[in-house]
Image (tube, rainbow, N blue to C red; front, side):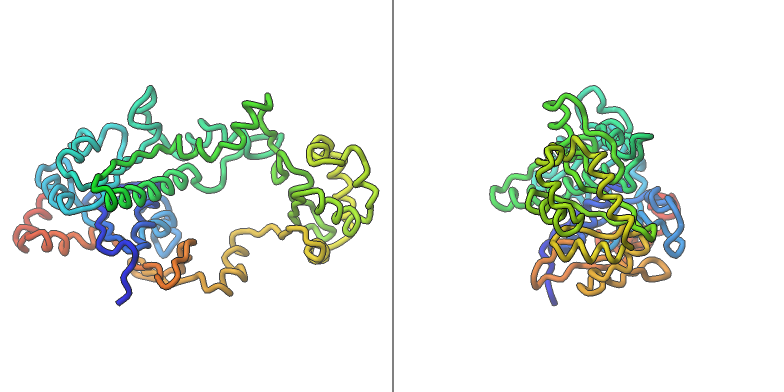
Length: 394
């Protein structure tokens, strides 16, 4: 039987919403045993974000495969005792509870490190566990607003939310890589280092380029829809058949080819308005008018063929349905069947392929699906488990 890279690693996660579950799902993809602790009855509230996937939440199905679900009432001392029995043998503990909640339950990083020296606690918060905003609740769109991302997204007429939960995803990625780093450090030095990631600081890192542009350029990049703030021509243009085509010119060689072989105007390379990349950005409106005139003379497929023929990066603008049917995903065999309670769904393989090590793609659990098995593993008798259920501890 093929072992996965993280086989033998146990992760206990007191998780909800998106950021922490996304981090732990990636650990599960690599073979870690992830025990997801949920509230008795209702479970993770992300289970009820929507009901579009065979009655299940699209968010939950996306980020909770290959996990075991254990229900525990952590306000009950018996529930906390069960959790601590798990933590005594676990490698990693991940939590993204509301500010201060983990500490009130005796699950703060410092206390866990003292009690379980080999355990790697990972805390995911909104604005960090210290500082003036440590006690504030934080959600994805709040982070997009606070880091300035919303001010960059949209058009000159108005701002827009990024269409995916980008702050949650960023935090989940850094929690995942942070835990992997801490596991490596523990293996090589014997020391378990706690990991802390905030949504705000994760997305702040992703704002690096506009931050430098603004601090040293004196103003922030403008909102330009699909146009690029610092490169031109780069964006979508409408073809004669009404479809949009995106293309990008990255350097002067590509600019010369575009002028001579696509626009049919080689003299533009000598036009001082367009001589350099910065000049082309400064005279974006004049340049866009020239490009738009050329696009208006051809249908989208002809434009794509002409641009590809001269080595200019280009693409049609897909909707999500077209993305799902993308020929690259089909040709590279990226889809797999994954179970959800009562059905199966198509799920994409993780993007990082490890040669000879297939990804784990096990089912998405029902609420508390593994509670009895885990409690039995911990030594509880059927009578014990029945009593705990009767008292809503599990």
